[in-house]
Amino acid sequence: MKSFAPNFRLAACGCVLAALAMLASPARAEVAIGVFAYQGERAAMSDWAPMVAALNRELPGHGFHLDSYDADGLKAALAAGRVDLVITNPGYYVTLETSFGLSRIATLQSRNAAHDGAALGSVVLARADRTDLSTLADLAGRRVAAVAPEAFGGYLIAARELLQAGVDPESALGELRFLGLPMTRILDAVRDGEVDAGIVRACLPEQLAREGALRLDDFRILSPRQVDGFDCALSSALYPDWPIAVTRRLDPALAKAVARVLLAMPENAEHVSWSVPRDYQPVFDLYRELRLGPYAYLREITPEGLARRFWPWLLGLLAVLVAGVAHTVRVEHLVHRRTRELKDSLVAREAAEHRARDQQEKMEHLSRLSILGELSGSLAHEINQPLASIATYANSLLRREAAGTLTPEALREACGEIAGEAERASGVVQRIRHFARKRAAVREPVDLVSLAGEARRLVAGMLVQCPEIAIAAPVSPCVALSDGLQIQQVLVNLIKNAIDAARGLPEARQGIRLGFARAGNRVVVEVADRGAGLAADQREHLFEAFFTTKPDGLGLGLPICKSIIEAHGGRLWAEVNADGIGMRFLFQLPCHEPSDESAA
Ligand code: ADP
Image (tube, rainbow, N blue to C red):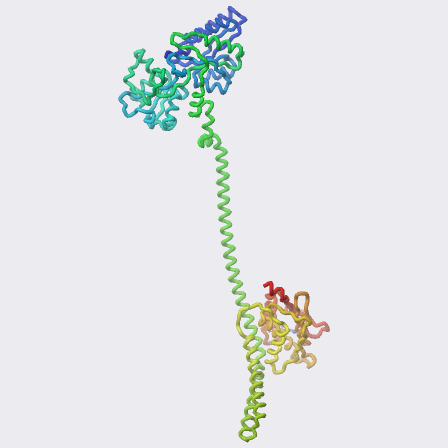
């Protein structure tokens, strides 16, 4: 097919003709036809001149003239509103249609076109001896030459075919070289082995062969195709030919008149005429698939496109994420460290508590032994007394038996006394052993009144002269959840101190009184004496460790009693008696209600 596009020289002639026409008829409205023109192809302005002449002839009220542009120039002219009609290749047309709202009114129709009117395609050629190349897929990694990135037949149509063959022309070729116009440069590069294959507009090789500029046998066609009615070598699908479109500037009535004139024009010398507008959807599809022109935005929504467009935001987001992760890791680390520290300190605390408990138990035990030690001065006497009685009764029995005066009654009576005395001695020993035993603390319901009786027996059992210890039984006896032995230890300690306080005083000041009272759900136990008492400044130090007024005292009894009572959830304190004579020591403990037991 011969070129149908204008060249600039003739465009200038057209302008001069139009200007002359304007002078002849000053009232004519000018109609500018913007033509996309490029050297070497569709370059003959004379091919457009008959069309302009026909329009001026058929529509005498208007002065039609041609303005030729390159791609950018046409775009600028459209933007500036200097164009009424546009003639361009299908590729530029689809990009301009979406930007400037163009409407096709006719499409070029070549006699060489396929049956559906499509006439534009690409042919991909290699040198005839390159038997290793037969399909477009073979071009992966190869050097390929084409016209220009935006050339429709000279690149884009073949680019789509390559993409469909699995070879992305932008990334999968070894090299993609754009050699520009004229297209013969590409064929030369293929023939000279500078590239492995070349892309040119379909029918160009045949045209050059007809002109004697090329031997078709020197080349082989990659992925050749047959399309009915189209008799040029082809490696691609066919697309509709050039359209002519109107801009929004043009009056619709004039657009209709122009269409009528164009459709009525006969074929020109190259057997090309104007036909009804063709379907340009395949061209749109091509641009969408290649993500170019009106579909260039599709590149932006690929991961790389988005990254390119939003990299500052992505960088910010990444920074925030990294900061977030770093913060989380740091917090995790701190939490981990703190947890470990807490665990360590808990373990250390538990060990310390265990040690303290152990020490406390040892102290309590020592304290009990110490009380026993103090009381045991008279212990020998307590044990000796029943032993002496036992010996007396036994000797008396022996004597009577020897004298033959032993009656069964006397024998029974003496044996009864011996058994009684032995029991008394064993009771003393047992109480001491029970009091002195070493054991871990327990909590059990304890009857405090009977515990007080037991403490009194223990003290009385060990003293030669024990003062009277009265126990005032409470109205409603209280059972405390406690360690009986420890509470007994407290009672013995307080009783012993009370006895010590009255030592050497007249008989009337010797008595000790143990009292019980209920205060809510607590029981208050009191050990009162009529002893020497203690000066106010000394009373302040009563419960301090090692405070003692006794020459052989340790000053540990009261602090230990205090710690025992507090460990039971109670309180120990001391007061001067109401009449100012002697002192009383009081402690309170929580009562163990039966409901507590059932709850437990
Ligand atoms: P110790 O009996 O070894 O001295 P305690 O801690 O049992 O140790 O007693 C400390 C001091 O408290 C006694 O030395 C004494 O001065 C005083 N004390 C204790 N009980 C009484 C009491 N009932 N009357 C007067 N003083 C007392």
